[in-house]
Structure formats: C-alpha cells, structure tokens
Length: 394
Image (cartoon, rainbow, N blue to C red; front, side):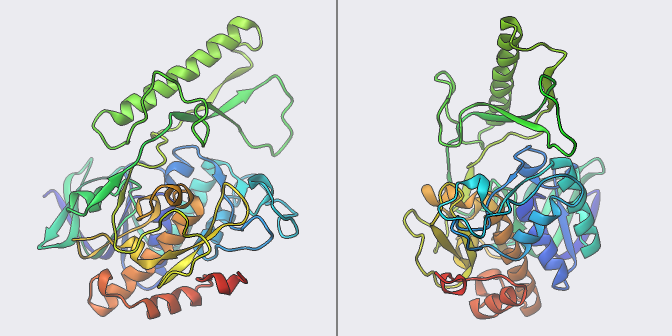
C-alpha cells in the first residue's frame, strides 16, 4: 500500500447521505473520514445538478422530516438564491412546489457543505475512489482506495456505505437488488431570450423522460446503472438528446446559439435507482402511515400530499455483513417505497441515523447490527429528530 490511515468511522460517498452521516458521527465525538470520488460534495444534488431539495413536509402544513435533513436545506441557501414557499404551513393538498422545499444553486450548496464538514472536523478524501472493502471475516474493517497518491488502505471500526449504489455492501457480499432507470438529463441553461431578474436561479432544462417515465425514448433501454457500460451509455445518450434539441431549435429559428446554450452539464450519471441492499426490515409499498419498530425518522411522499412513512433502523443494515451501515438511496426500499426514499431529505435523514448508529457502535465496541434501538432513538431525539407518526400528530 502507498498510504494508510485509521479512523473510528469511514463514510464512503460524499452525497447528502454521506455528508449527513459524517457530520453526525463527527459531532458525536468520532474521528471520521469521508471518501468522495469527485472533488465536489453533494452527489446528485450538486455534481448531478438535481437542484430541488424536495419537501420536508406532508403537503398539509405539517413538517415531518427534521434534524440534519432540515439543516442541509438551509445550508443550500447560505451562499446563493432560493426561497422556501411562504404559505407551506397553511396550505392543504399542496403540490410539491408549494411545500417546505427549495430550489438551490448547486455550486452554492457545495461551498456550504465544505464549510459544515470542515467545522465538524471531518477529514475529507476528495478525488479518491473506493476500490474495494477490506474484510476481516464477515466484518468490513476498512476500504482500499485509489487516488493520485496510489493505492491506500483506510481502516475504521465502523463503515457507512453512502455510495448511492451499495458499492461497499455489494462487494462485501451483502445481498442486493437492482433497479431500472429512465433516461432523463437535467442541465443548467442560459436563455437570453428573456430578461433575467437579479437573484434568479440558473434555468433548469431536462430532456428525455420525466420522473414518471413519460418521454422515455423508445430506442433507449432502461439501465440498472451498475453494469460496466451503463454510465457511458446513459450519459452519451442524454447528451445526444440535448444536441438534437439545440439543433432543432436553431434550425427552426426558435432560438440561436448566441442566446440559448448549456451553461453546465452534470458531471455524473443521473441515475435514480441503481442498487440497494436487502435487509431484514426494509420499506415496502403500502407501508406509509404504519408504525415501524425502531423508526429512525419520517419521510413524506414528494410526489403527492398526505402519505408519511416511518423508516426502520433495520433498513440500514445489510444481511451477511457486519461492521457496515448503508445510508441514502441504497437503503432497503422496494418499488414505490424506493421512489419515495431515494431523494434528498430521506437520504440526509438516513445518513444522520447511520452516523449516530456508527458512533454508538464504536463507543460500545459492537457491530451496528448489535446497536440497541432505544439509545439510538434517544440520541436522534436529542438532535431534534422526530421519529414516529404520533410525534408529528399523525
């Protein structure tokens, strides 16, 4: 190995789930490393230009998601424009744009994430690829990583997989399931045909399918996102659609290259559901409104007002592997539940829970699978997280 280091907790993946996990573990007194393959924190929210911080409320004026998930929403506005809708508390059956959510500037969010993690004392490893987990029997004891310094070994007493694709869990031998993704490309665009007011956010434009699959090109298959050529095919197909859009607009005279053009392209494939773990206590369709044993927090349905889900701690625990938690869109959620759980607020919420559980596991000298739900829930409540439907009046 070209370099080595040791920590209490290592978080693989610097998206919102990984950032939340690292923040919580560090604030709980752990030495923490955060390994991110790009040079930008925030994952799909920033590098991927998915710039909508979806609702923390149920669409009926009731906040349901708290803690670091709410903190990060406000951090996304610290160095750039964006506003929370003024009437979200008084509205009923609100559509997503009127709820407790914001549209943010991705670059501004990166700056705020850098600041928060540095202030918490998290040691960042940017431009560093997680190559493979290091196993000690059935326990994940560290990660082999690669960067410009060569191949290195980072060891820890607990690992959090926040890769979005369950890369650590899968390579450690945990059972996983894969999804299928519509081809949808979000870009930031300059549109000089209209006067832009001061403080306006960059214009977001998408080509391909919408969130429900409408507009999927018939000649492009849905991809899992975890096969060797999937990212290349997905990204190039999306950019091909974007070229065709501009070519057609220019040819028709509806726009020209001086006034309408892309300002920023995503620097990662915008897959939504790739690979997730299989646990003993995951989220399944139809479980909204149901009490779950060992809930670690609540998530609203971003697609429609009303449904609220309790997220069980068990959904963060892969089978057959010790010393490992997952956070974000690779937690155990199936079908319709996966679509609800994959977005920013549940990712941040599960990240905070994973960071807290990792800290408790390290302090007790046990695997995360042996962490008792009672102390974990007490810790999260102390952090301001509301855990059950009853705690928000449901």
